[in-house]
Length: 152
Image (cartoon, rainbow, N blue to C red; front, side, top):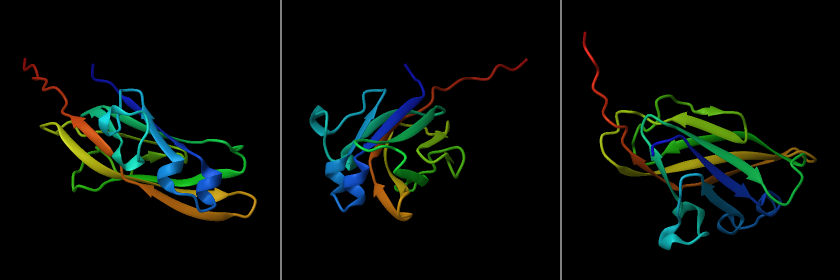
């Protein structure tokens, strides 16, 4: 069934902010059977693939684990395709800090795997220090079904 997809990025932000390794402190999941290679439940974030659909909305939600959210805040977030595809109908994508969303182009004519960058800038509220992090997972985009227009 074709549907809108929500992709969750869980981040152990305090450890990451203090110099931890991104691969060890971030994890993707989605509501449409997204996978890491070999079907395992966890892996390197850049190896995660979400199955999404042309002409449907994709929403990314960035959640902080293991820390009270009042201590850290996402002040900017962005999604860009890195394979040269114009995969979204509008740029920049809608963003309100922890959430980013966009509608995939209906004109994608065949299934395609696309790498993309998700970058997010986080502020540690107490010190106002900011750091930017970037991950490059994948979308498996399935084309929108062809709908023939009726002419009267």
